[in-house]
Image (cartoon, rainbow over all chains, first blue to last red; front, side, top):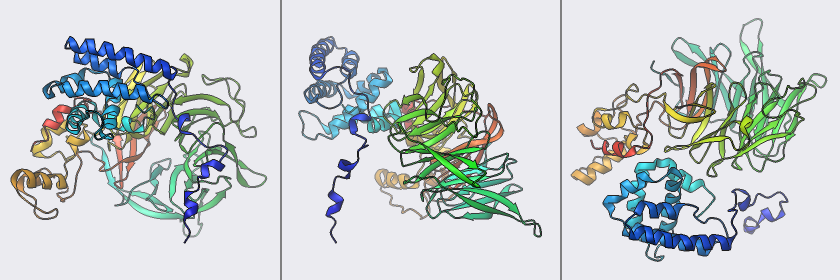
Length: 156
Length: 420
């Protein structure tokens, strides 16, 4: 039986098709601005880390995280900054850090953890570190946090 | 007071609707038919079957005053069922009337309007059919609300003024629309949602917090506030008189809620994938999770070992007392390999309490997702009891006043309590 018709993109013929970018509110900043903001943030994060303020550093990274299309460079930069913090944090400190984050920051952190797990071998992302954070974050923020990471279309 | 639990079947209950005096309940057991159960003492006995749909029934509503049932199904149809009593035998039979909905996708949800002279049918055709009775043609005619709906409509709720309609949709939005029908409705007086309300006026549109499709919508008893629950595990309450951004959102640490009901102007009950009805309280200043109607200590399932840690828990991880889980853990920690179904080890067996079957058991009354919560006793704005139906085939009646505390967020302690 010919099943090639299944590969036809029928949405092309639908005048009223629902597009991906209609499902979330786009970042009001333009892409260059987002990249700039992220770069300035990296420096702020470094100075926070040098003072030993991990919570402050993580909050900075997770605040106004770049999302959506056409900001790939900013997204990668932000992920890199975050993974460097995740990697350098002692396992015993994770629960208290996760608890002190705001609910929005917890949701964003969960999105980054899943993104990290989807990029095996990317940069210095290590599976065991991510899983360690995931476990502690789920204990604090619950399954609801995971559900939000999955449903949210503002992909980091 | 402990909830009354009625196991209706071993099949998921998609939808349930009681009649006015609560002596009968119409349920759809995940099939093409509606079964009417009759109350007999403390039990429910299956009675008439309403068979006319040829695809799964998605929703049922029973009008309390006019005593008519309306059903919607995946076969794109809705039927209005009128009772007729046979004069010789005294038996009631239900006569179906097909409603021409003019939609080309499944009908997903149906509700009578407060005056019971109209009903609204949600559908996958990005439309809501507003149906009213045309006495000249002796049939139900529908008018479609289309714009600006971009995806399947999953739930509806009527405003007490019989004109406004709230719709929750899979395009992540909850909307308030006007379903004004000239021949049926009197000119509505102005509300917080707007003054002039011709058919298909969009009075408000709210996006869900983190992009979850909106499972359930409900107007507050006064009609001045709107609550909606979405698949991003959040519940939002909007107060339009304070502007379009006056929305309180509660992000939950549990699985998404799929159904909700206001019990008072300052309280509502919502339930869903976490298998227990949660109670929320608040007002224009803000809302919070107040507790759960499901007191795990009363459910008779919280076993000896895990009981202490789990009694206060809402964690699905901590609450789950699964035989399969025990089997694997025993195999892991002690090298035991007890197959499911074989005599359970003493430690595992004692935690199963109640039924004593070797199957997975939750510490909640409902053993699976709650599909629908409805008013059982009291009136709109002063509800005393609510009923829930679940995928576990149970129908449960809950006393709204008995709220057990939950501590959402402090999951760490509950996981610690998992040790048996």
